[in-house]
Length: 123
Length: 290
Length: 204
Image (tube, rainbow over all chains, first blue to last red; front, side, top):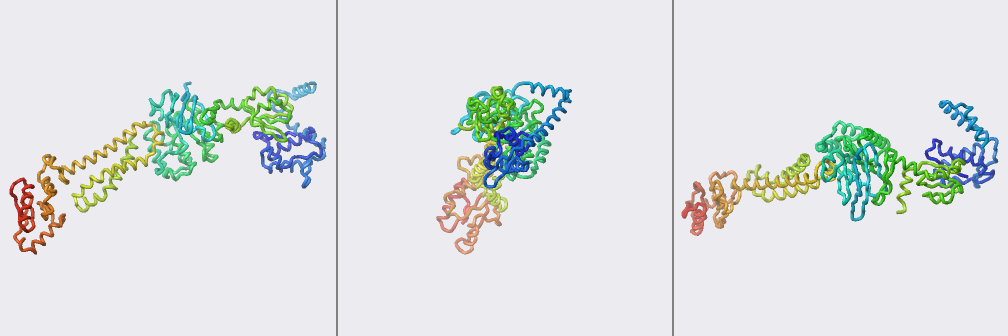
């Protein structure tokens, strides 16, 4: 798992952590049932406040990505790839909408973008 | 354009401290930030530039002439705000302003009272009754009120609240905006002064260890976060201030353009992330371990 | 430069007032003009104190910030100090010329008025302690400076031998002598010395 915090990013710290944990789960860095670092450990490693980490873990738990077992620690829940995929696709949808809108200012149509994607696909 | 201030190999020795080999130029329209840890010699350097003390050796030309020849004319055009306010403690702010006004040829009394008003310094208050931050602000007001061409500020942000610090930075930007004046600020923390400086000098143990444009500094110095095994060991070794933890490693790179191609694929894969280094990171790295 | 000089001169003036205060009190309030001699003692103290205090109140760090040369400041202060010394000298000279103090024998010809000089020369005559008083015209009885005056009047009334004594205000000086031939001789010699003649007016 690879987590870094960027102070200059507009996203708040806890959101950066949740995003990166979800990415790690989706990418297979974190398997189901794998133990996540404790709140204090992660706070020390990332040099932030434990409250931020706790909030990130709470958010992840509410989504169902991780499970906290009292006394034992925090573990990755059963990976529901479908749900992760949906969620990432939604994020991409927002990003793409933004790219298309910006492209329109430069007279780049959606078709131009599609052909760019296709070229990547061929590579 | 002609530099406003030029020094060449300036040296000054005290019994327990030596400032050696300082060579720098200050061009009009620029703000120069002199940073360094406590005791690095910043105050001594600023005192030398302001003509408060004289150097043991080396050349110092301000507005084209040396202090020995034209002390009065030079000091008339320099606004100096020292770290330790030297004003008569039992005199009111207004008296000090009037006293100083008799010596400067371009004193602007209106500006002085407007600044005092803005800083909420009552003119009838004795100097020693002002708070620490107010004393600093008073020094600034006095330095600005005689329309100087060169500002020399020693720890101008010490003890200032955020609003006043913001005002200081804005004032500095306004001051040099005309393109014919310059400012030198010196500080032991980079608290905002690094964002306004256009040139950065770092002093350590009396020697200048860095003298570069700020933009160039930001281009060359980057913070690199990477996953284990994402980088060559040789590259890893070249990073400074390496911090390893189970979820990623981070290091400071001092020559990013050279590193850029080597980590291109790592960047694309998301195993390596790069960010601008903060001036404090650079300062800490350069001034520790000596 | 003037603000600096003004500041220092202010201290000189205030110290002059402070150190001279007892003196002024005696001289002006109580009219004891002779006490002006203490000026000689007070003035050096005044000068030292003014200089030291003005240096203490000075802030050279501030002055060095201002566009004024170090050398010019030092010169101005030195000149102010010398001006103080000059004032002191002037006061001493006036004091001497007005005959308010002792004049060494050497300088007596310089004095404009022999009268005053002699009066005070006599005041230092070694025989004086044995004469009881010296009087000069214009002596104001309401401000007796020499208490011997009272004693003499008292003596004159009580001692029959002194009954013939008269207080005769002479044109220059009179000497009152106590009873006895020895005293008379001493008095003669004193008058001779003071008046520059071999004989003088001695009242016994």
